[in-house]
Image (cartoon, rainbow, N blue to C red; front, side, top):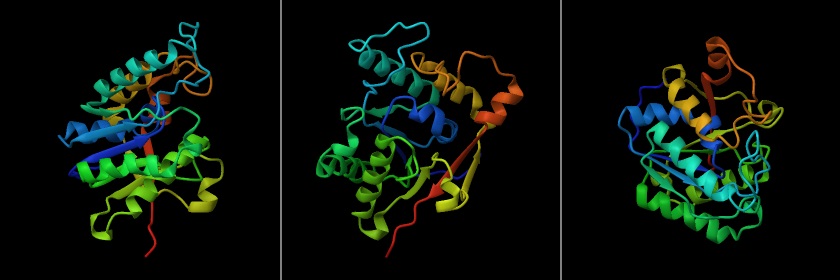
Length: 223
């Protein structure tokens, strides 16, 4: 795990649980070193198809359940500043860019982070993931060059390395695997889904192999 002390870390992701599976170990490491961390979760994931196994949520109750799960995940990771701007799940690609970029730009001006964590636009599978990453890139690019934070982006699309190369930041998060797993399990309505954790049990070695490393691509802004 990197020992670099950032001034402020801003995490911008679209859904509750994106932080748990994507950046949790990195975030927990920054929080453990005393770095302020702000998490802007753009939606409440209210259109998610997972309702728990066995189901305990409904379309009506899911937003409130996912909000509480998100708050529990943040507590596990040491995130004290959670922002929920209230954009609608599965609609980010259709949002007015001025509203989306304005919300993110406002956070950048307020917090002046030295590092932003988000998804790599075009290489993040879900349209909300891509739209979130693209909005972050636009908002950062709108800042004067000397004021721009470093952007570390998560890429998960198939064959993404063919297009953008290997990750240039690899973070060993085995030291913060405990908080990361606690964050994952906090999202109780989601984590047993087959595409996430499933209902099986894992050995410590399997958990470390699956979750012990987090990979990022530094977004390169043009001149």
